[in-house]
Image (tube, rainbow, N blue to C red; front, side, top):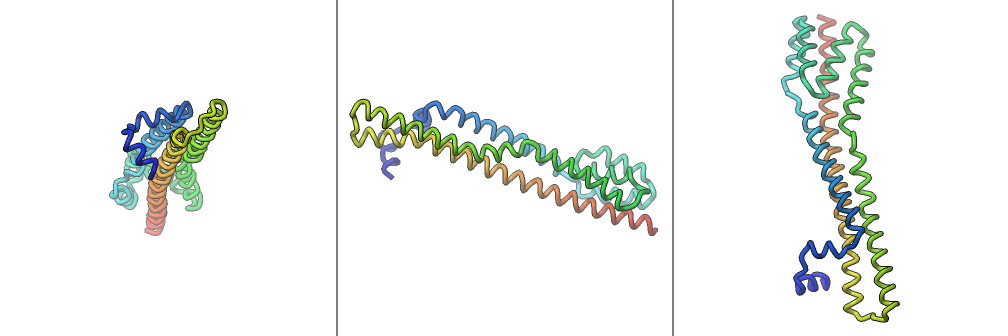
Length: 216
């Protein structure tokens, strides 16, 4: 409350307040830029991977049941998403035991999952180290503050309070950046899980189609 009153009374802008954080703010700014870049890049990639036409499996099923395997394979090959790549691999393995087909599709699915999760660990890393950088900046600032007090002998309440709240800026910034990275990581993980569920459903549907073609 005292901090807010002090800021309001002196009309300190956010920019000038951040500048009081010292040199440690620059690594924090770098972490923020990296977090935002990775989040946007991964979000676009995952969104593209999850854009699956609801009628995709219906078209595959119609072609396979009518015996037009070439058309089904061509349709899957020309569709750019993880589900289509799995189905294409399954069509290429047709004629082999279902277990072998399922295994081949699972391998493709794992590669596609790895592609979607690429660089996602960077957000997790930033979520962990950004607050540590912030705390480090606060500790360094506090050491400098008390060293200055010990050297000059000036230890008025205003000097101490003013120095402390400016040094706490790095901790607050680090926590905010860590929170942004944490939320971004969890959001992207949720979107990947949704795409993974679509892949599992499509794989199960394809195996059912193969069983239908076998018994028909």
